[in-house]
Amino acid sequence: MSNSFTSPPTLADETTVVAGQPIGEGAVTLMSQTANYLWSVGGTHNCLSQAWAEGQFTQKGLTYQPMVEYVIPIISRDHYDLHIHFIALGPGGVRSTLTIGASSYTDEVLSIGAGPHVIESTIIVTSTPSQSYGVLSIEVKHTSGTPNHHEIRSLAAHWVAKASPVSTGAQADGLLNAFTPFGINRVGNDYPLSSRWGVNMLENIETLRRRPMVYASWSGVDNLNAAPTSDTDPAPALYVGVGDMEVLYSPVYIPHEAFEGGNFYTITVWLNVVNIGVIDSSVTYVIMGQEITVTTNGWSSYDITVRPEQDEDMSQTFNLSIYRAGFENDQENWLSLVSISRNATSSPLLPYIKGFVMWGI
Amino acid sequence: MATPTNFQPLPSARSAYNGVVTLGAPVAQMAMALKQLNQVKFRSAGFYHVGHSTWTYHSLLNYTKGAYEKNWIGSPSKGATEEYDLFYFSQPTSQWIGVEVLYGLRTANTSDLNNPGILLELYEISGGSVGTKIDEGCQFIYPTHLQASARGDAVQVNRTNTGARLYTFPSGGLSAPTPPRPLYIPPANRGDELVLRVTAEEVVIYAVHLFDLFVEA
Image 1 (cartoon, helix red, strand yellow):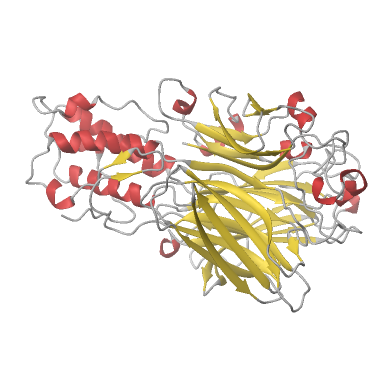
Image 2: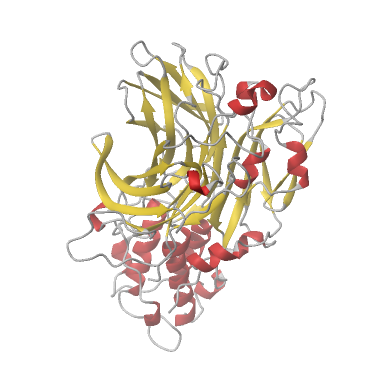
């Protein structure tokens, strides 16, 4: 019994399965194939995206330095192949490490070429993930040659879609919600529409609805080889600043149910904060209209439960409910993000955001 | 039937239990839910923040420990070009890509502008490098599609997007960029890893947001 599917799927004509008439032949087969397809392919687009202007994200050092770090969602325990793509310049290496619980997986790619070129890195997760997210750390080094640095202009990552058929047996997503693939031979026209099919389909749809989609990803660039001494030297941001309120603000489709209580749909904010406890024991930010108070250093997560205002212009233009995922232009953020009046030379050090990721349904 | 754009309530699992007469309605609800997932939720997207130098405030913010102040970075010099290759991991169902660009022109003094514009082009990845162009792309030009900054020579953030009106290609295809429109992924490239090339003249790019357009099934 193969849990096969076609890609892209042919959707069932829902008018053939409405009340008051026999369930149309073929519809159940197509619905089963579509569910198998969505499990394998749905949400395998960008789970990380960021870019830098020319000359900013660079490394001159000859040993690996951790430079950016992100949290990425585990979309399922069946997707184990993470592809990371870079646009790089100059000779050097990129070493990417994905840490899921106590397990770490690393891939290293060396490249040469003075001009922009594509680097493709692959991380294979070889054991069952123990949690619903992983921390992706990216190290960069220069190797001898010209020019005298290795530079990253953009990077993006995605989980690789699975090919047909879906593996046999019940599957699970990162939060252990179940997905039971459909044996296509058992849902043909001359087979009964079983109770099992209906129960499994309802559960599968719920599981797929909860699959996380990344709304925003940002990391400061750390460990430059040397401090800049002129405006031609790299000086990328390490922390989120007040100017980012206008820019770190993605237009994302979100179903309204994400903001309702009493269901399992969540929007998650991840913040990587430093310097908590040096002077301030907490720091508060406003993200999607909701106050989030951080009390620990490093990555920590928070759920969005308040429904913010839609972006009406974008919603009307693109025919979906579009919200802005990011930092609100709010007094709290003006007081908490890096600015001229609140900068990293303050002593003692104030809390800052070194990494920011959001995902939801 | 129209595609539901939000999550509609599902029938109770009891409606599919043994001993219950299964009518069409629960199956139709499942079919609509799958359609919503395929056409709406699982659309591809990529949201790129573009980082710039914090040098302007280096003396105060101490290089990597700084971030942008409200006025951002200094304006780009006359004739300056920025180019970005941004990865877009499309889905087999992807067809049209909508793009929103957050940008700032180099100066509010419009007489000092020298044809600022933003060009968007779509490429496939081939042999580990940016390969063949698969959409000639579209171009935003000043003052038709782009706004000048409102204050002094400090660069402010403006937004523009391709809109969602689907484009009808002329017979024989395109040989030059068009005015702003969604970019098209040919059938052979759907599900592939693609690259959006953004070329900006006298414009600072702050963020680029890419997403599959919602198209009724």
